[in-house]
Image (tube, rainbow, N blue to C red):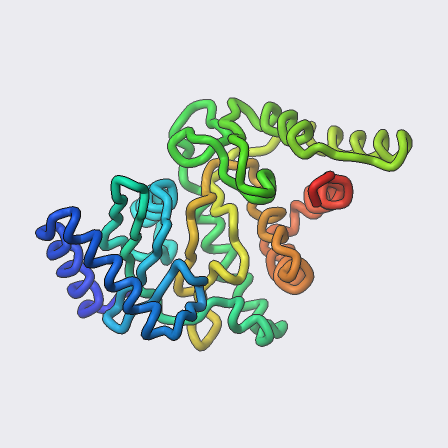
Length: 291
């Protein structure tokens, strides 16, 4: 929970920036971002496009509207710790700045070496609560679509490896799976291997899956923790959307360096029911041409 003083300060920031004309705000944000980057020595735990400040705000340059929409959507419907948005501004030439509450803590990626069994158990409890709450948000359409928030195409690096090519939306999980197989461009060494792999994929995809709201990038770099490893913030919502229920798990294991400890020791215990889906996803990893 935000303290009363922090809430009041964010409220003041929120009101004050709206008194400043658009062009002046853009110049101000550009200046403050560069100043923060200089004060941080060009370093940021979130990457170069995200900078902390000393006055309780965080600046993200290059943020997309879809991330802003998702953050507001989740904050309104859940108690999940999503940063409060003070402002979002886009220039005529698509230079954008997202100004948001600075979450006090560190990313789990920076504390990855401390992921002991006791820490894993703490993380698992928090992640079960967070993902259950996220998955309980009712879909806006009946029947629900597999899509980004607002019925837009899916943005997922697991699917679009280089970030290109529109994918979706889809009117059913079946349609999503059919296109996923084609889009993935699988290549096998022989007919026997291909037949066995595709048979396993198609057999799995016959299962009925719910469509649920999914963060779609739940890895240690996007999880903020306090000194006791309790989760205090979930970041980077630009890939979120309505996905098959198993997708949160397999996407959480997409980043290679996190597959064994984060994926195997944490997320596999958050979602123990989707181990067969992970085995099938490994077929994609092994045989997709661009992996």
